[in-house]
Image (cartoon, rainbow, N blue to C red; front, top):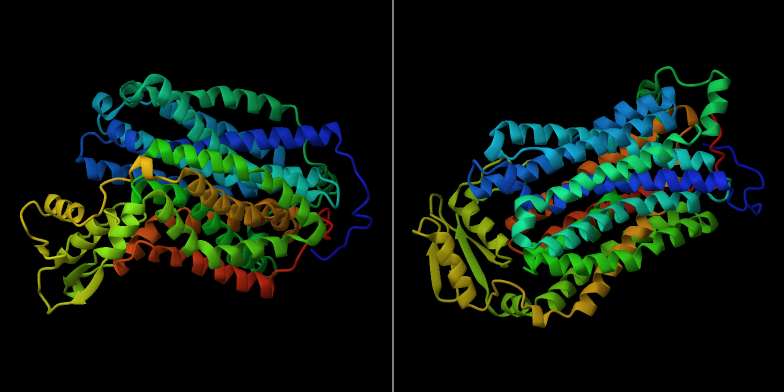
Length: 542
């Protein structure tokens, strides 16, 4: 990690072999991300298909649990395939990962519903999601290392930035295909059977990607090390069992990937969630605006990857952390202003007060969807948060049944038909049941979404090269993959659940943003103080 490569800025034109490496690696990784995110895009429909034997709310929770399972196992996939990549080679491993991911997605498209095979349907679905999560845990490390080890010195940031576009392009493809099939078939047919098409299309994408990857040769850096007999015999123990390398992995997690993850998921997934769930914008409208934002911002991945070869990885990533920390609150408040001005007005003019015994009020963090929050306080706070209503908290004596005051209306949590009465009272006091389409300022909403995605490109574009350059060749796959997938699978993947819990606890729809802001600031400080810039590193070092 300390050897400097000479003449790294010598002019170099991309060779046909290098171009093939980038195209093959990027295409396959796009398909993997597409496969992974198509599930989240269709979560509501999948709840009806595979959990129809339980109440609707529980069905949706279990669907989210299945989605979360894919995130939770990603670090374990990083360990399994990271070890394989360091022992047997990069090419072999990421051929296995793309096959596992593609087959898992294709089989979800063929899986009979709960109505056909009962409980076996959700069980098989969860197993397939676990396979997908494990595969994704091995794919990213293999792809970025393979490209980086084929890249000339002084071009690693640019070349690996193509891999960094793949997660966003995978989300773009998932949204675009769902919108297209849904519009062509109509909502009824799409909900009945058309939802299977995006999953089944994965088999075609898999076939093309696999064929291309099979034409590739192994990484020259790995082959050189293998020929010299210097591959690691125990890469996991060497990577994480010695403080010298474990320290790098810990700092990479806390100083880079954790902050990158919350900015990535905050700027793309949570922004879309905020539009559809908090601001009640129609899903199709929100998805179209997000697709446009993704299309505008994606070229910035290449720009910032190229720039990282000139000025370094570290300053660009840290700049993204600073911008996100400073501007997340005004940007999300701006989304409310432009996408649902009626809600903004109601939040300002119609204060809501929750009176409850503080000891009954839980922090409703529920990443797996299995916890139950049933106290009167939790019932009210959860309902208000789902209705996008800010509220103030007032303490009550122990044992008091929680109540909510909206204007002159006062409702107790144990009132008959509490949920419907609460919703009616909220609407009477100016809170809209949904965003009025004619009042959405689409241009400004898209502009704010584009800005959020540009932050994503800042923190993500140089990350691949930065991580590759932190670890020696013999343990690079293992060392890189675990901090990356803990950061993205756990810090990022559980962001929506964490944000919801904070908002429900505090009573402010924006307060959950303190989670990505705090993590970004933490990574900024750790990265600034403890992580080196690495663009001059010779990655052929053992």
